[in-house]
Length: 231
Image (cartoon, rainbow, N blue to C red; front, side, top):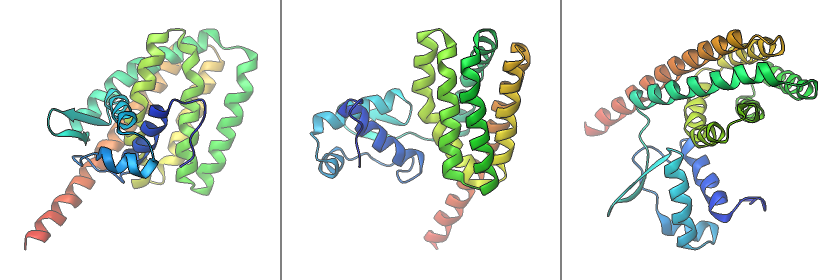
């Protein structure tokens, strides 16, 4: 594991454990063992506890008295609630970006869109996944509101967990997602904030439904394995 000097130790630990949750290496309901993480990363248990508080704020774990920390459930209701608030926040972002973008902003977004297009053609799920969140992060500054930026940062890991599941169960989603990103950027560059916001809402609805379908299939598989193991 390579830590970035710009991050606090707790943030680095949270990022490491959060990645394991996002990718499914740690599954919902699984207990987070402080001692194991401390030994694995050669850090103090105090730093791990601080990291767990960060992960709780980011909706990836729940901390219970006497039970400790467990990986948060990914339920249909949780997905619906997540996308409800994300749609509102990202729609505000799209409108403000349309009002305030400058010529110096254009190259970064168009270059990233071209990069995402190449990744979609190659079927590079991991690369496209990382590029998608680089796209989101580039837009956060247009919020012009530190509270919105903070909420988006805290919600991003839960979105990453959902998006990872969706992309890995439907490879065709790569091109679909790129088309949405391209349409949103084009509307923003034409100063059409309402149109950009509508495209954001359409994409969020599309992605929410894709995640819900993926989640339902995953639950069915888990149930089938559980029933088989009882025989």
